[in-house]
Image (cartoon, rainbow, N blue to C red; front, side, top):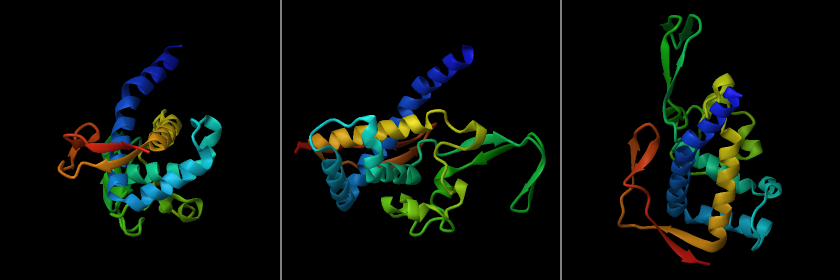
Length: 202
């Protein structure tokens, strides 16, 4: 029972900020890429019309999923984390003793030209099934991986799809051009001073 309570507390305590930061960066990237927002809005209108999304709609909101995944590629909420080597290893010619702490940086890996074409561009299509099939498993790991992968992985992606769809059903979202957005590396990768947007009812 204790393990289950710990997992729930992890979802509540850690999950709200990471998803919030990821959605903030999503609105920022959509504001800078209006053609992506237009395509996204068309999918939402086609799948949902005016009704609220349900769990059954998630598979149809495929482009919505790709938009959120691409936002997390460029701005992963957990931009760095550590792991402890359970046995000796060698990485890139460097010896790693057992029990060494190794830092992993999704922010860097997600922009590595060896794994991503035009890595600085916001291109949700790179997460389509056909474009993802030959990508190395850990070229993209905003939720970590393996036995220590974030327990909220699927919940966060589901939550984000629903939120993005419901917001764009009711509003056009544009950036406040007077507000400068800059990434700040704290525990999470957050926009310094936030992301300011203008909402207009559709």
